[in-house]
Image (cartoon, rainbow, N blue to C red; front, side, top):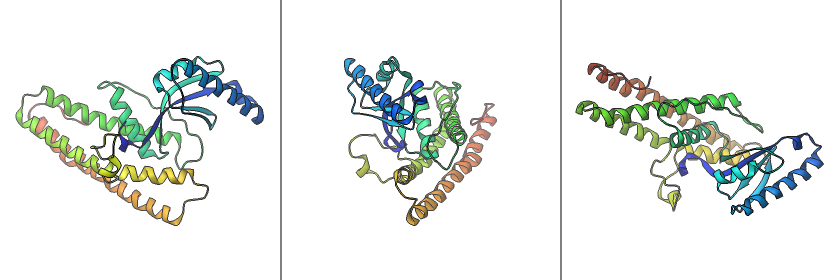
Length: 262
């Protein structure tokens, strides 16, 4: 994952069934036993864990190969389901950006998809809002990216190819306001490049979400500033679609070709 995507780490997310029906003291005892068995099975399969914890009725295991580890954990008696997951800051822009990054890595062009969100804890948004925001982000980015790549790969029209490359560059320049595309997720990214808008939003929401007290006046002021910047960014995206993308589609139409972004 890209460092600028807001992803903190990859984990194994496990759920149980009957244990959740027990009283709190009994449930805590059974959860501890289950975590012990999970650690043991992972170690037997050459997948040692760094930490294993209980959060909001879920078991979170860190330090193992999340893909292989999920297969092992799913077979442990008492586990209802287990899956690889990524931990991100609990704000909708970061969640949407992470969904886009994951989708681009695993989805084939024009492949259908569905997003089902489940929210735990207290957040200023609903699970449906996450589904809508993430789904819209995936769809919008995927359509433009795939269609531009397809055009430049198969079109022999130099004018179209040149215009497509220019539009691609404008999209990347716009993205750089949100997330630094030069980030590698390794080394000294944090000192080489300044934090972009998505990183700042993730840092703010991450700190506020774990604090013991309500947001300070300073937190709220920064939130307002970042919210305004996010609004400017979204308006710039809309303007690019209404202007440059529309002009590119007009060029395609003049060549007897279908437009992009539909």
